[in-house]
Length: 340
Image 1: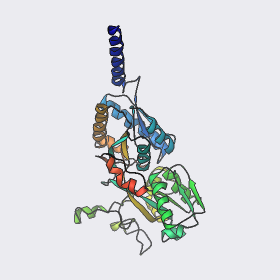
Image 2: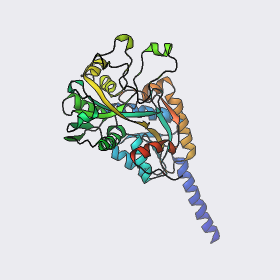
Image 3: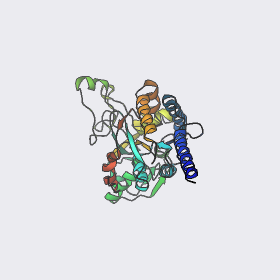
Image 4: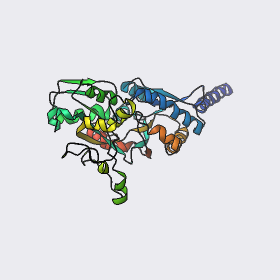
């Protein structure tokens, strides 16, 4: 009888071990979740290429899945049982960990050398908005109510100022929000902001200088005194939401035509960048292997071309982090800070 019980026990243990070893095989692929935060068609093109590259680098079968929307991304990460990793936005990650504290971040995005980002408030310059207070009673477009820079933090900011609007329109993605402004369907929109890149001579004459949050958000991009583009000598590079529209949509003109049309009324932030997060119970050895592969891939020319593509997530590097990296954002958004 004891031998029979022992045999059943050993079989069960071996079955569990076999199941764990099977993760990352065709029978049980690892799921890589992508959030549709920018251009869905670009994410659908680039996401599978990244997953395939990571599969080749790790020897693991990694299946790319583009979530239907922000809510679906959150639900999938909360419910996943040790076989999923993904790229949630900052706010999504914090919401996920409130429901399932076993979900954990390992890498944060680095964009143009910055581990943080912010929300920008975009409007047509012809509207004549000179401050955030001018937006009261207007129509606001944003991607999703679950978007960190599109809605969550701007909404908190607007509420603190006591601003209310004629309409709040969720239109799916950051780019859709700016298109709504360009098409006259909204007076302003909110979406991700990015530090302006200076002209090349700045690095030569002012080594180590860089834009930091709190400086004029359109430095090198727009001359507020002349109310025009800077001269070519002083003109830098725009890499914010306007650049994504110029790159992917094109019908609204090149980037400098868009900068002429669309200005930044204000910014909200800063906020820690989005992350690579793993589901609760994900095997540590496989997790480490994927983390190292992501670091190597994004630092390769072919990987950087994918991760940094406009219309995708525009990541230029990653930094190793842990869950505490998001505590300042939790405090800003009013979310509880976990006990550790």
